[in-house]
Length: 173
Image (cartoon, rainbow, N blue to C red):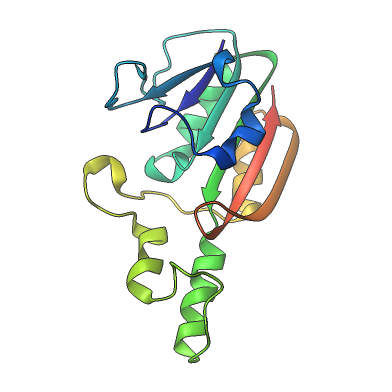
């Protein structure tokens, strides 16, 4: 079984398909599903064991204790299973604020003012689920993955579909 955690919509944004391959192989899930084809799954209490893969794009920053989530995900995966994580890069967000403070242009067409950049740090705060409770740097996420037991960690910074720099990691059990 392969699970997309925190999908929100019926299918992930097309940008993410490069990481997922054949979408029909994946169970699309969210803690608060809005569509009948989205399974209700809490990322902190996945009801399955021996999962082949977990995909968590822009979800880990919404969890107050991400180390608990990562350990749970590790325990849920089968041996050789993997997790793919995509989170906002807080260092990039802070750099954008510094650019504005220096009267420079930001690197983003959307995150071009402090109000929007603060959404990277705080979330949209439209609901409990939209609030950001954790921030990540490349080194912090890598260390958290290692401490959770993950191996063969591939991690990078990439400017992606959300018009911001993100940290993208793939790690194996």
